[in-house]
Image 1 (tube, rainbow, N blue to C red):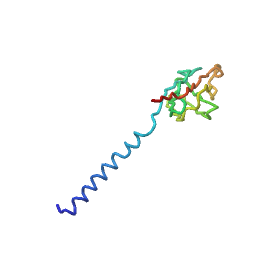
Image 2 (cartoon, rainbow, N blue to C red):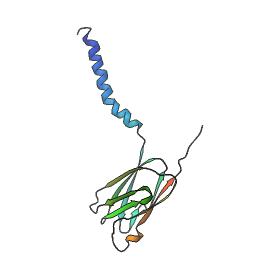
Image 3 (cartoon, rainbow, N blue to C red):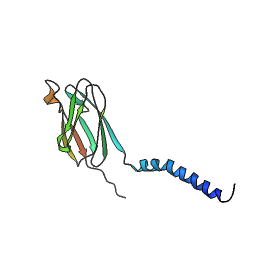
Image 4 (tube, rainbow, N blue to C red):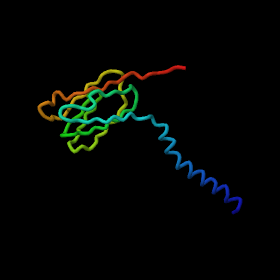
Length: 130
């Protein structure tokens, strides 16, 4: 191999390694996602109290056990339809400031529809100083 080709091959090798590792480096710097599984059924959500920390990235994975339901948090402008097929519906958002946010079913699901409620409870982030 000539001396001229050696630096070119080295450069190619470094470039390939950089391209392969770059997505992993970017993904590692993404904030962690707090994923919460929620099951909707007549006439409740499980869990009925959803705990989050203000400012964290949250992913709700919603499924229905028995029929079509809705999942609405009006103060956060979240309103999704949860199909009766059991297929997951995901909702991604940043947890709001500390407080209690009411959740209600937004699709009529029977005689107990008005009682189908839950709450998103956002707590203040804990900061530590050293």
